[in-house]
Amino acid sequence: MECVSPFKTDILKGKVALLTGGGSGIGLEISTQFGKHGASVAIMGRRKAVLDSAVSYLQSFGIPAIGLQGDVRKQEDAKRVVELTVKQFGKLDILVNAAAGNFLVSPEDLSPNGFRTVLDIDSVGTFTMCHEALNYIKKGGPGRSSTSGGMILNISATLHYTASWYQIHVAAAKAAVDAVTRNLALEWGTDYDIRVNGIAPGPIGDTAGMRKLGPEEISNKSKEYMPLYKLGEKYDIAMAALYLASDAGKYINGTIMPVDGGLWLSRPRH
Ligand code: HXC
Image (cartoon, helix red, strand yellow):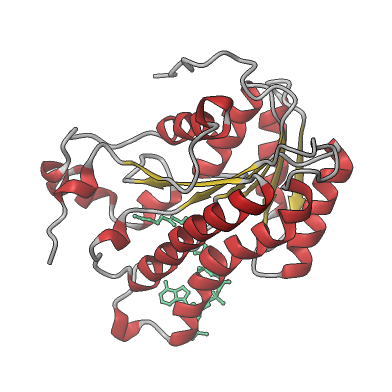
């Protein structure tokens, strides 16, 4: 069922958003909803074909969109992509870090390099993008007023609130992402008027994460632990992102919003 947005279509009018991992899954849904609510959208990803198809999809709704190939693990890519976004659209208002790596593996079968790879993508990649975006997204940056900074949104997860089988690398990576969110919210909120928030999605249907992380388990037994007894939709994450990115969320800073139907409450604490 196609869900209709409850928000007015101009709540991000005139805003420019850059989304890593914006070409697929949750990232693409956020890109689409941002665009449908008035933003110009730059999406960053490693795979050109995925980007091309996502840009065509976004443009089919009349959304001003560009695809920028790059790997968040490379600082030079991050710098180039941020610069190209500003060159194309004149400024940067919203950075969404949605790029992530994932696979199921037990700790004994995971090489230190495998562990490092996911931290490099999720945690270091998030920090690198924020670092490269700072000069554009801070108050007084190009195309910005001297008093008003932009907004950063980091996508993490809830699995590190407790522990998760075969996800030691991802749990470590997402814990670091949440730490980056809080610390930047404190320091960059104070110094640069930048709001930094997070969204922690639960199990969301029709995503790479769900395909990889055991859809059968989720759709059968684990549903019993879900307070709402159903999977989330990419739409749910995008609506939370819209709320946080728009003026409705203008006093929200340093919050990591779980969007999981309350599932995190039901995980055992040991
Ligand atoms: C064990 C693995 C592995 C696997 C990679 N490695 N896949 N180890 N099991 N399935 C190890 C490799 O052996 C290697 O270590 C190291 O990781 C780097 O592997 P590469 O293949 O060279 O890395 P790369 O090509 O850069 O790919 C990294 C990747 C990434 C993490 C595998 O391509 C990827 O996952 N892409 C999918 C993106 C994705 O699924 N996104 C959705 C995320 S969902 P050695 O020691 O051998 O050199 C999500 C939800 C989280 O984040 C929350 C859920 C609740």
